[in-house]
Image 1 (cartoon, one colour):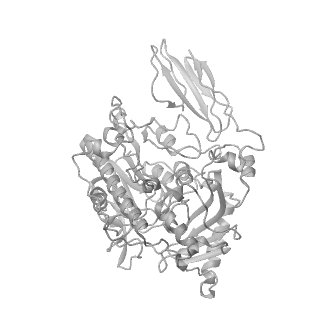
Image 2 (image 1 turned 90 degrees about the vertical axis):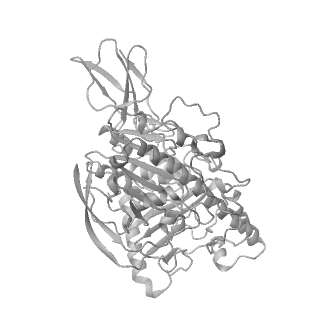
Image 3 (image 1 turned 90 degrees about the horizontal axis):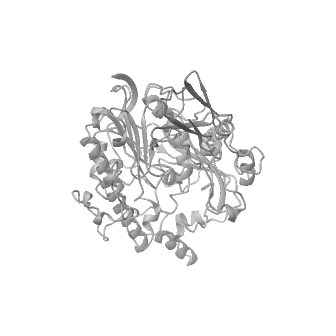
Length: 579
């Protein structure tokens, strides 16, 4: 056992995400007795605001998440670096801010013809690696089931397995694992009409069984016999909902809320299936379990925006043996903190290039004081907004004040609640709060008291009483932008040129060089920072996974080797063989 001391804030009250905790708090230093190399399980759902009972919203029952929260720690102050998924996943995968590596536009490989730029990828510095590759170097089995969407193509070294079959059950005996399961049923598109459950993944019930043949990968749970043992309680269409003030309280909006909560109930069932597999395998008390969303909620004026409704997502962490069960940790956490936290929990010091900081483990520094976020292009429409938030106040800087907030993203306009807002806007029937999003211009600076104004509707930037706080957060934004090398409002074509070092095409990774000397094979690559993957072929059999090259390899008689090199953001090399 490895003993870690973790300072946490234990709160005596658990309250809604919309109301700050005013109960008694106390600091406590808690001793965590963890395995030397604990298993780590990530349960990641999409477009997820704090719409679940452990975070104060009891509209729909989530028995599996509620049980997980009762046995773990809830974190109400987790923030994505963007209000949309792909940039946020880039931050999670690398521990770097999307706007520091060219991952800030949604997406880098779509809508390019419409906006006149080539398809490209984010390009982190050469030393940057995906966190899963770093854990694989430690001997972890790393599986991803199965969404990627990192704003770059993952190297072959990233995962032991990334597929609908990916599961810790496919690892070697007693090998520690880092496994991710992605749940898409809560995605924004689940609100599109006609209503239906979006990609209810039978893979979550048959995961790990590589012999299972899915005839309908996106089928409904009604056809999924393995899920019938647990009944999901769906809400009635007549349920009364708390409609956020930025939405219109109409029948169409209430139907969207009804669908949102029922999607969450379906997701909870899928989470329960994975947790049951973990318990059935006898691994529950050797595993640290994380549940979180990939950014804030799916509704209009939530997803894609950098108000809290678009950035804040609930997180639950369950430690082995229910350490700190039922407690609440109020620290500010950013998505860029996930990568260093994984390293810290597995006993490895976070890499110097990582821009986040560990919030758990033996390499946890003092708690962060601010979180930061950015919003740029979404599909065919570009803006330039940056935000910084402390424990109470949010500062937003708009680099295109002459441009309105609302972007007519066609994908979002398929949501009935969004169609309602547009219809009522044209009819002149929106109130002042609802019309804010549709202003033709926006202020250069915004400041919100997120404690007293959780929906961020009352801009305090012009109020002299808050000038000191505005100056503090503005200075912090300047520091952050300078530290990460972010140039807001940089033309995207110029960003591409910067990422490609002024060349006209995407840079390419050099082919690996394979040399045999003294009975051992060494592999190298002339491209700085390239990851090298290899496979050893024997008797015509090719392994499913690529190994991460670290040290010279000794080949047995009749064995062959294949190698591929790939620096993130570059075109991967050819696969080179050697006998």
